[in-house]
Length: 75
Image (cartoon, rainbow, N blue to C red):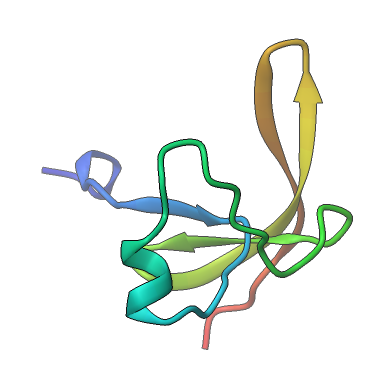
């Protein structure tokens, strides 16, 4: 097997919010949870939980896309 066939888990982190367990349990269907950062800021792109890039959210019709704006250097 070559490295091309190795699977990785990609996650795009739009933001986060800290809340109590009580508040989380009380969320109802349709609840809106505000996130940090604001929509104008970059989102984190993670591979296997490691930050690999940052990007911006782009909406085209009914699709949400991520445009890579910065690649992280290997450490």
